[in-house]
Image (cartoon, rainbow, N blue to C red; front, side, top):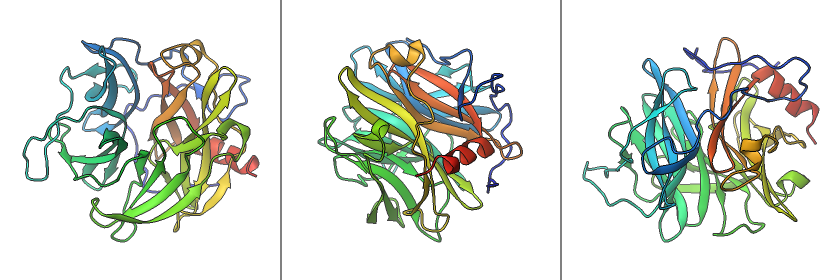
Length: 328
């Protein structure tokens, strides 16, 4: 069986046992959604967000779509990973000199990745079109933004949680500005987080029906002794609109541009009312995974119908076994 590497114990890890008789690889929290509508003043919806253990709580960066329908990023806190409070003021970034910089027109779909003693925020930002931005924080009070690492159009930037020698690695999804059949997962590398290169294709859309239109990486890759576990979203277009589902693959341990196993089945697809009905119906979009080292438990957070935050559970053994069993 695959084993976790560099995974610490997570205090107050949210968890709910798998329902009796349930046969899928991932099961939903019975009290979903964990974040409902209007959780912050002047914010109508919070979704597609990420949190990490921090001191004696969980802290994270959350997408909040304001009542003018423009998304910005907010800091949120939780003691148990289920009940949240939010800071009222959106995040304002500074440059590497510590100087305040203008807010961009929108920011959305953040990931939070700890590497060594810092926390890296990766999100979709506005640079004459959507592209990836990166900021660094040590205390979730001061956020230092790097200088435009990627050109538009690009989304779903996800850093690996450790360096490879002296290189940072990032998964991303170059794309255009619309819902066209243009969205594959690429791997890029950098020594300084500013200059990125050696772009390689990792996985392409159209592998199966449920991800025929585009795919993108979800939470930070999870390191195993024999590879990297990556949850992803896949999009298909139907006669009634788009459907976002959750899938997974396993990448090579030393060269993550190589796919070892890719599950032909989705792990979850929109089924519950909070997933099928909302601002954008039929969407589940994974952005965060808490992993408890001693038990192998995984708490997977996902955006639901661009309206709520949902929580689901699995274990490393269960999900890796399912991927390998159903890999094409």
